[in-house]
Length: 588
View 1 (tube, rainbow, N blue to C red):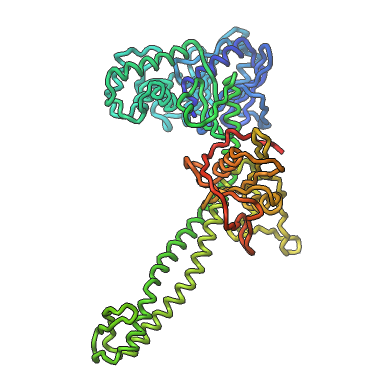
View 2 (spheres, rainbow, N blue to C red; view 1 turned 180 degrees about the vertical axis):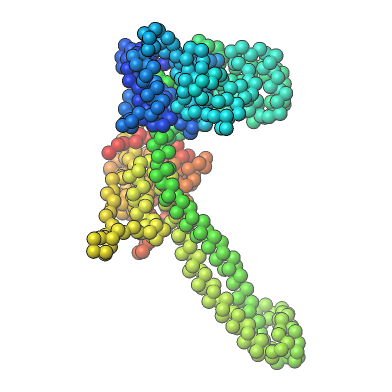
């Protein structure tokens, strides 16, 4: 994803067409680095401006935000200057990630004057800056002193300028000879592009290479001049589209998950099975992308404690398992000591007093065998010592065999919970995951004291999360468990005996139920169900995933087994691609 100069250009075109001539009727600052302007033109619009270091944004929105009771100083300053001010223009300097709103208003004397609201969408350097007509900074939503930046101070009274921290070409004016100097850069071709031209992101550079049929990872110097001339023509076509404001906002999805967006077609995704969703508005595109991304980000933040507990428990169990396997390997010599003891009991009479070893015939193999001896002990005492060592190793082997199975089961259980965290979409999905971690002792139960000093019973969280429901184009229904409790519910309570059960082979993943409504099920429906099981498994990122499937009635749950754990003894198999673009999610 890239909020680069090209996306900024597309947004500026949309905002210019929509807001030029409009009047600012309301200004709010719901967050410390975020503004919400209400602008009345032919219609009433809300413009969101965010200088968040991790998520700088600028787009038209329908959303309302709750503002603090006392407006921050920067918000008060804007209200002072821009009460009923008119937007004269929305521009972008070059192809920078900067949007300049030129605003006309009346000063205290009633004279018409102009000011600028400058939005810089530059990652951690993002800012919203207010300047006068002489480009003198009046204030900024984030003040930057010389102690913070040696390049530019953003303080009242300082001149505003765009920092030139590195020399870059303007994509609109670059000449062919200058473009050919890319060959002199000791770096991959895509990096040479986005480090040489203003407004180009790594995404745009990769797309240019793809359109030109060139590998983005090959060093720029390895391409001949003819190849770079061809790349220049592709580059010029793109810049001409930008110059003419020919934009095609689109969102790239991997299944339901948004993975990228762009203001121009991204042909590099065409062969990857991704879905391209076109938008008529840049703001609508950004709203949808960031609302979904914000949801996923919020889920990750809410689940950070669970992830930390889960990862610690998983690392601890894996270390324990590795240690147990090493100890188990050490017990492989136990039978050797048993044979030593038996042979010494049978042939030890031939050992000389004080001998350090004895060679006898191994009656199991009819071959000679040399047995080490403790010269301070007799042959029978040595035999007794070997039998004791054998007995100890045998007991260790028996105990470790049980322990390693228990530890392996714990690892599989934790991996299944980790997979559930990965596919959680909403905060309510975390409730059952937290309950499972608590039930198995990975999280402590929190109880409060009542007024008599006793312990109150912990109030159970309300369960509102439901399994996912998909439907094929043929009308077949498929259900996916989002956690182990839902997996058990789908398999042993919801599904009928004639339904089909799917699961990724030998890895953590969701149970998938294909409902059998009495119709004959075509092969492609089984393939779609397998793709769903692959998509919601630990091996989702693999190109191909092996899937086990079977009649639901053949799936059993052992007594005392952990949630989500089942056994089956005969099954069918298929190889599935984790692609669910052909399925429609049903919101029950």
